[in-house]
Image (cartoon, rainbow, N blue to C red; front, side, top):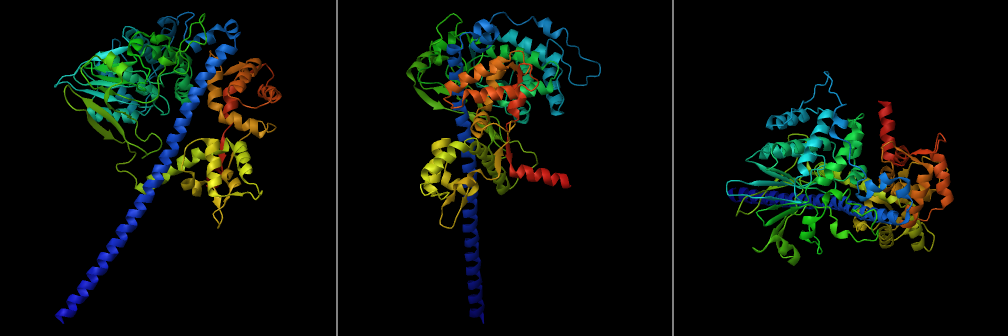
Length: 590
């Protein structure tokens, strides 16, 4: 009996072990598949973001092209030239012209700042913004004017020193994510004379609380100008703000005085330092260093003439072909550490680097759960220490599969919008491959066509199950690439090619027309629209007939007064997803 019992126990133990191994193998495979899906989703986000950066370069080239080919613009409207190319016709109005006529009513229950500012004002702002209060426009304007006054006295590069007893904290992009900034302060303490910070640009855009972040950073800078250091990023730029949301945020939160705030902000941006040098060994700069970077040039460049990173400064009476690319900045955060003990200027010439570190401080950048944020702490003679964090809406993170589903759905949605914007070109590419006119392509043919037209360098085979319908033979119904999605037409008579072009370039067009609209009225003349579109058409090599644009301009001029409300018009171009329609129908039944 004893032997039989032992045999049964051994058998059961063996079965339990096998079951555990099966479960373990299944979970490993499941986890690997989830992580692969997450990796593909992040690849989509990153590829589209990189493509947008290339679009910004193309837009920059367009403004140079416009300067060369739109010669009468200076005679017609010199303010446009001043705004685009960094020259100043006359300085902005005096501080009192902005602030004196902005009253704070007794009914205002938000934070009230007292000038000169003290550390209590920092606490006041932080507490108010936690409660989602809005700082009154008068205080915003006063902070901006005070900040500009101090920044104008600063060099292009701020020099700071650390010691074994005094650390400095370096933060990267925040992109309007106030919760990340508040979490950094919670973990690391508020700025003070004994708690120094460097914020390395890109404070604004994308997130919903850019103005709150700016106000906290500027007030902290005014209270501790020797202990809180601000570098300019590529999003401290009025053109970038038009494209990525900060302009819209300002005009929404400050409906009466938003235009004045935006005007002053344009000027404040230009006075932000280019970078910070720590202990004469570590360079903190937004965008990094190219092979042709000359630190001596950057030390002496007139930074206040850099109105936009998309359009470097050009003298009005100078040669428009002057190559100014050496003064441009890129779009990432790259604190760099020097290898030897020679001067930093020499090191930048020799390109001898020991370590390159990228710091990004906006968690959940693409979607909730997509990434962590981080900051660095440095002290003299010590290795850098890294701290990571992630803002969550609840006390604990959602399960991995829920986070992956959310990230993947968002990524596929954005990718589908890219696909529908190139529908005509994609169909033409598919039909060239489909010689039998069957409406189907092999996986290789479909993937080749997608990459050839979209140029996103994505794993199309792996993504195909989320984008198209495949038959039992593995062939793809290529028209299913456009299923459940279409571009809403504000003008039904317009041709599909024109609609797709306007949708694809709507962000660039909005920036261009907003630059022309220097008074933020939202209106441009029909003639300006035609002239600018023809230049745009020529530079971007877009094949749209002039008569289509003329007809479109006439239809956009709804009240026939010779002006076009282009912002409203461009907003009318949006992608409609089938799921959106279903959700709207479902909500109507509840």
